[in-house]
Length: 446
Image (cartoon, rainbow, N blue to C red; front, side, top):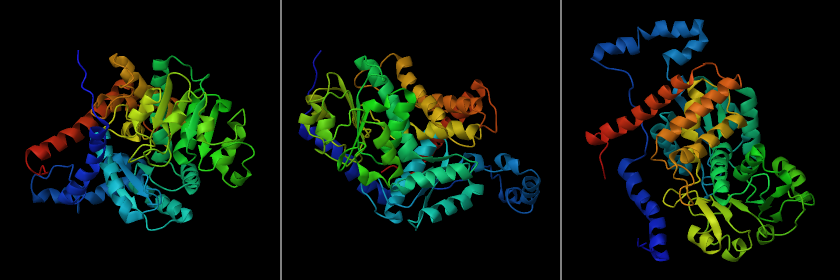
């Protein structure tokens, strides 16, 4: 059986094509999401039901029984995608308007993969207190909140305060979403290389919001803190990094990780490492091949910077890595939060969960990893499900909903069969809607 070898030039051309297409298709559609009716409109008289005078009876029912807002309105399926535009993808502080295309894209993925109605809300403030207060004020309209592309360290405080003060799920996808999918990828990658999470040395390149939470979830799953080494722009994190004393999360990692107190740069930390989990500066060539070559045999490399990974995956393979994943859908092994948040929110919303816990994230990660194992096709190039496998989002939703019920934070208790039926119905409905709108020319093809 012959194998066609693709040149690096062809791979680079493929990698650059999404950006070229995006510049043509965004102005073609003038955005990616819109609001459309979900109720029947048989004739104009139906507005007397949906609006005045009929709607007044519904309003009074909610006033008397506040929990009925979930029955009478779309609150239970509506998520706010909130950003201040201070850390958009790998582009940095580009502002709320420039961040809007990303938030719209988030809403599109929420709907198509999770059947969740998500609305982009980009705020014209960088003040954490104003962001917190704004989200709190918006709570009556939404069943959940997805914080997105907010710079650290304020993103930690914003998430903590909102989770403590709100009774709907508040989630920071750059933290919890990325961590969930990375854990799922690591679970299967370690099966491929036949290593145990309790034994592996893990280097986390980048000590921002994503990697702080990734390392936390790795440890929650069984990785030993002393076997983790963080590396930021100034070098490894260790107890001597007194420059980080005012950064709560980084300073905490200085105290509990890096058992051998290695003081150096990334290339020093990678010597004898089993796993590289990078969430740092967009590349390519931020990470050098010769550094990866110093890792242990059968190394695992997750290179998750967007839009360009810290190094090209083929370079990591040439340097000796056994399993390589990136954040992109056009390379094998997409380790990207798009595999997580649609199914996780689907499950949380279906049981009207009050929050999303680490245990719910682990349940989602195990469902992601388990889906590939269940198919019997796990390999070095098929580590995680693909986004065009809708059943995986159903599996995630079921796992998350069950865990929320088990933890006592669900307002609504459903059986496994009911959870599965609900998720399948909502996801298939969203995808069928897109298919029909394209077929009938309501959404024109380019």
